[in-house]
Length: 465
Image (cartoon, rainbow, N blue to C red):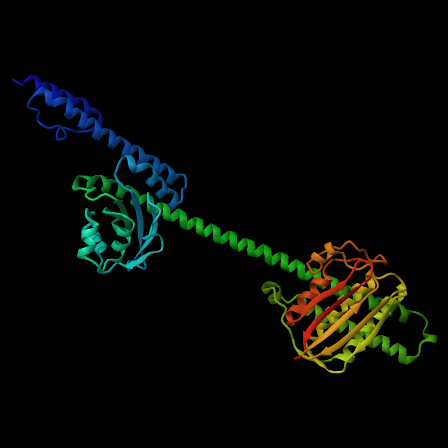
């Protein structure tokens, strides 16, 4: 006939087993009733830990389901599992390079002096971690200082000991039977871990293996998303660049088109007063203008240049006196309706190694701006002088000058200044930005000397060779 103590024990086992499975091996055989209370306390403590462990793992799984990133998952483990298992530090390493390398991926510690942190890598072959993979069992080192004395070649142990860590438990992480990495629980107290801990750590590691694999996948997806967003930003930038270059084309085509229109109107008038030589000169100028526009369109709308954002130069020897004379002549005709004079004050004879199409862009923009912002009847003075190893081209007007505020954004794209064109001309705000690009591409410098109310002297320098 069973004793009263046996009856009490059987009643306890039956009660807990209905809720937590078979616990008959958990409670020891009791000799007396006085042993029942501490045994129950131990059982309740064990069940509480197990329940807390399950709760935390369930919460962790929910975070993964919600799309938490790998670092967030590991931060959660570090913050919430210290009531279940002992540690002062947790680290995670992944197996990379087709199983050749162990790479530290993440680490957190109660101390601030982490030395074995993310980015540390070591070969897997021949390391003690390889044994963990082969056996599938955790490794416990309860005296790291002694372990280091026995294995002084272990750089990772040297670093972890320097952090103040004295014992560690390392669990393998496996997904579908394949090793993916390791999780390291470490303590700054010797003899923290025992075989009793192993089963609990392995249960957690099994759960974390799946969680880490999923979390890593989410991180990879996030990285892909970031790369896609980066490419979208680049595409938007290229689209803006394309629009900018199209705006440049429209801006720089306006002057030659206006010139052609004016000459065509002259040619439509009765020619009794015009000599054949003058008529031929107009037609030749019209041909020159159309050739310039075609070259400009070819350059500006070249898809490769638009995508790269560069201005490729076709460098040639440009005879500066003839080149500047033609430029001034073009603008003399265009400035005539405003009664504005464009004068070539001084130009040295000599050659400049430059792209003639781009050089014309720069000079035309400066002269047309000077005419546009100068009062009617004023004078625009142009010069080109060679000084030592560089050419200096200058266009000086009698306009309102440049204010300090306008000076700050003078050469920016689409910059609209406080001054307005004096003849009602339109302005895109691109002329000076185009000139800056051209001068920069030639290795030169563009700037302006001006005081409000005293006109402006826009100039640029280019290397002579």
